[in-house]
Length: 119
Picture 1 (cartoon, rainbow, N blue to C red):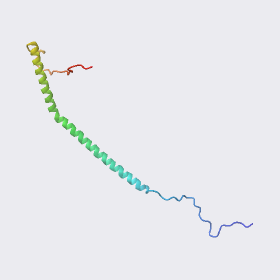
Picture 2: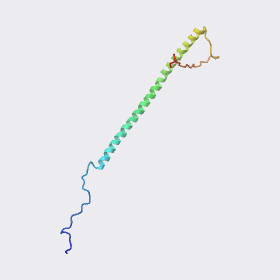
Picture 3: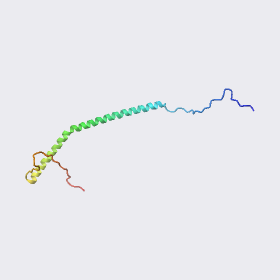
Picture 4: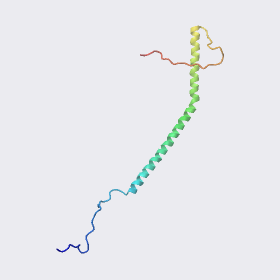
């Protein structure tokens, strides 16, 4: 029996790799796109934080500037209540009485109570 010999010119190379077409973009393009999107997002976050800080500063300064007005309103209400209380006392008792033994002004405290108790 004659010995088998390779064909003249040799055998064809054995294909052991998968021959699949490349799908999509190169990974570097995806990396660049993600980096761009993240950079834009961080920029927008920075702008938002800066805007929030500015709004908080504006709110704080508006409250600071409103304090004298609110204090004046509270003082007017306090005087109105004080005079109404004195008038009510004079109407009920016929005379004004002194509650304290000194002439020093003591800031009164008023408790707001409802007209009728509801159940």
